[in-house]
Image 1 (cartoon, one colour):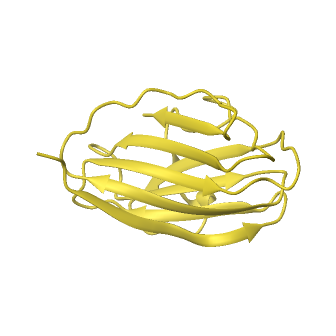
Image 2 (cartoon, rainbow, N blue to C red):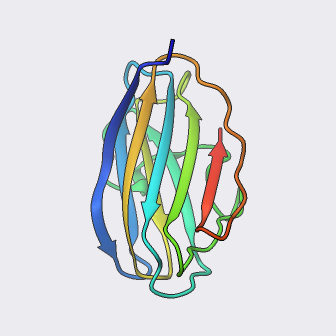
Length: 147
């Protein structure tokens, strides 16, 4: 039997200028696992200053600075953030075990290149298998981080 999955939008599709942060938050009450996904189109220029932050909080936050950082999920510090591709779409994925975490999970992505993107969460109540990290390929950036 497949686990029950719920897809929750965290951020509408929009275009962000260079150095602007894409911020999204999801209420995870009642769920055991989350997959946070950020999809972007082609970057307008090569990027080198991409940064990810994931946080958790007991109350609904409006900024990543209002949350407690999730250990292992701070891009540049805890893992290498692969630069956005200017030739292909890009996908960033975070797999989170929500058991023992706070209710709200927030994500923030900042790039030094203008890009269009959308963020969503896939929440589940049953255990799901581990997903291996996928290296960057010729078809765009793919980061998968499990914590």
